[in-house]
Length: 426
Image (cartoon, rainbow, N blue to C red; front, side, top):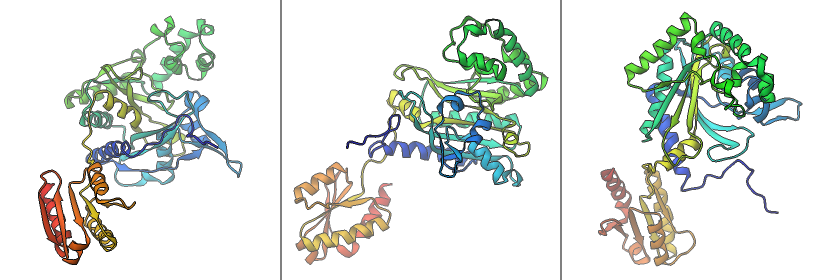
């Protein structure tokens, strides 16, 4: 039986996984500088969490979740996004009671959505996300947006475009909601069944419909910016002011609504312009979600965050031919000839690794020529040769592969010699 990988998933093999490790480490370093701490939540949660947190009217909940019943009859769902899980953990672990507020968290992990697999859109995908919960200060909005932009720019991406909008507070959204209903209702039968269902439940979702995106009513739909009250307008103006002061360029797009029900006030997306990236141009998105924590049983705790796909990031880096600075070599390869020399090489290898060096040797009984070829394939910086004669003389020959320089070293000094040479080359 030929068992194959499930559709919409991928194996990340050696040679490629190093790129993933590199961009993950970049994310962790950036979050350290911004003082965001890592959180790790379960891969599956109670289904109700996403129904309440993400929203019943979203495509994610209606069409894309991997939901199953466990042996105890409980409905569980593989997490389709990270914010709801972080908010649940924030409430359950009473992080709102901690002295240091807001609570600033980040996560890196797999998410799951059942949708048609295509380039940059997998059924299992990895997200890097950031959440700041416990502050309604617009400066936090600017900080989160700046962090997202910094991540892409520090990896070398060009042609980035930040698009922002305000979805307003509850009062503003209610006024806009009624305006949308009045706008679409006379011709709602011309729209898809999903939009017809959303008209009363959440008409804002109509603006995010892909099927009816070209309908003429979409182009003339009321703008949320025309319905912002004084408080929401002032909030949005402060976010824009702070981004201007930081030198973060942006465009305001009144049609930007995002795909999740919990967003309000600030919403944003980061896109990439230029050829070679296919049809998918949105790299990441996020926004403010005041009210989500309360929906999950916690106290009033306004929050903001974003999430981005590492798969799409890697696609963008490849499209722009950006080479990541990944170490592809090892420090030392031990070439051993003779049974006793092979035994000694195994011990030396262990000692090199304990000192922090990357080292390897032959394990399939290659001839010396084959071992040297293996050292070349691994791009070894040094090759250490140990034969029966060297072992008897308690010596080892060490060759610097780039210069060709070769030295005979006392076996007792070998580990120290290698450690010192590697430290000098850093």
